[in-house]
Image 1 (spheres, rainbow, N blue to C red):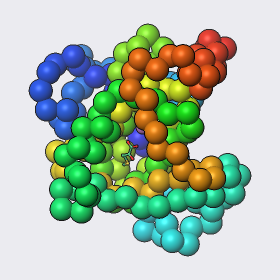
Image 2 (cartoon, rainbow, N blue to C red):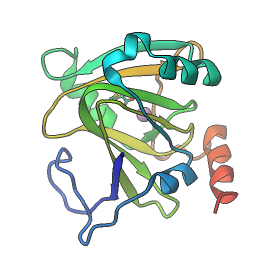
Image 3 (cartoon, helix red, strand yellow):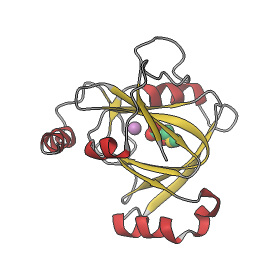
Length: 179
Ligand code: KMT
Ligand code: NI
């Protein structure tokens, strides 16, 4: 099952796990209440996987590509790594399916605390439009992920503060009506 935990406030390399001490694990149910959805799939058969097809069909994830994030494969690696880790939001859902390697998606909870989600091969996640989040590689420095989108992709990231967007207001309303 997916591993998620509250982060410590220690400075230093973001690629380390940064688990709060004492440990504060976070369940799938807690993530769901933040609007974060998670699936486990068989990444070895991503090219012909009925379970993936079903999710894509039901949720209209018509568009996809595959991104490889490591020093030698990603153009403007350092710049992109920095951008991914700036706290930001999007006006659409961020949908990622890890095909190989691993990394951390950090999301803010209702009290604005960071939750770190460890994502590895076979993990698929959706972060809702309007949630503040960021991404970093872990100490293995390698991930390959499918990026999915409803229609033509819009990658624009709005760094915090970005509270005036309708997507943010909608997300705050969603948070207010879940327990
Ligand atoms: C993003 O938007 O943060 C990325 O595409 C990088 C993470 S994909 C594993
Ligand atoms: Ni993002």
